Image 1 (cartoon, rainbow, N blue to C red):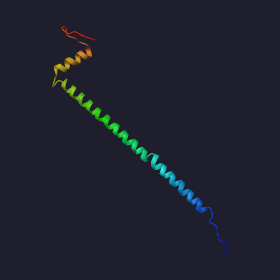
Image 2: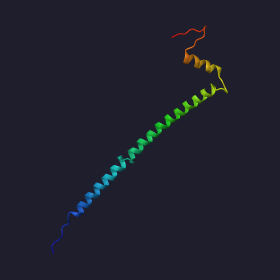
Image 3: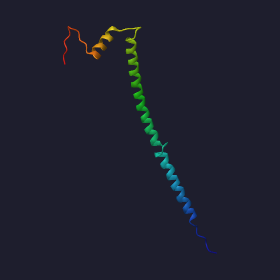
Image 4: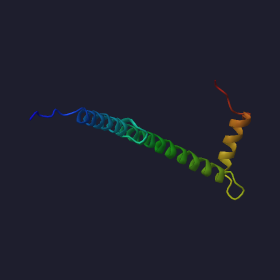
Length: 98
């Protein structure tokens, strides 16, 4: 009785399994939801949080200045400073050095 040699089907199965496994491994690393994209998104989140905090501090500073120039609470020194800065006013006894 002659021994039967294995056909090509087991070889095709192994090759297809390796190709699919490689594809899914590559997708897990570099895909839209892969590990490398997750690291990039985490870095972007950290950058945007720093920017958000800076903008919140700027908004708080502007709210303070707005309150100090409101009708309820008028800071004369701040009003004088803003008028000088925006309009370029000087008093008669001041000297401008550039």
